[in-house]
Image (cartoon, rainbow, N blue to C red; front, side, top):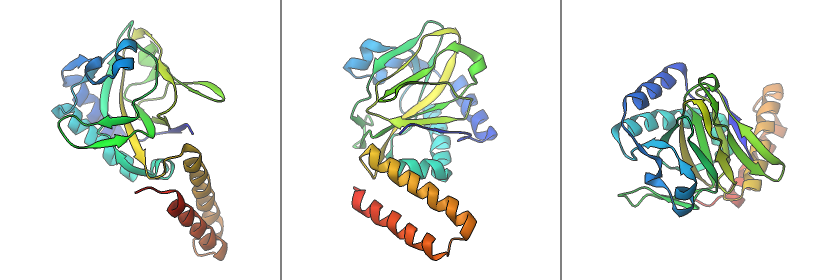
Length: 227
């Protein structure tokens, strides 16, 4: 399931992230690449664990924690600390798949990467090219969102970032280990939760049918969850 989450960041949070990353030192993007990615990747990023990356990442993690759409769609168990990249003219990231396990350097923190996420930190009008293209059974989906918006998609998907032909693209990227490993099961739970919330607005949270459906939802989470 691929999902766009608009306005993940408030205007103040977006401005703070932009300020932090603009003033920070950028390094070769292959500092965190695996073997496959190193051959496909041409960009820059903030050093993993740098002060700017940590502070901007904390802003994004706070935003994730209060966003009901993200929580319902991802059912997060662990979130890898957000990383930050920028693509200038001629830079790109060719087709690849993300590593199945991500390890935070210098720690024992690791996650299974069930979901990948990108938060766009500048507007599409700032650059040409740079679309994030994600492949699934329905074809290739090209994503280029306004600043502060996020796209969430299965980490198992083949994806790439098209070459920049003008300007610069800045964003944050990270991975999520979900309590529910299978994408199809997460999608069903997300659809069920959304339907329950919609019906609850019409009939009230305490309507007997809503209570029963909520029980079904949580029993399915119990069946699928690995915590």
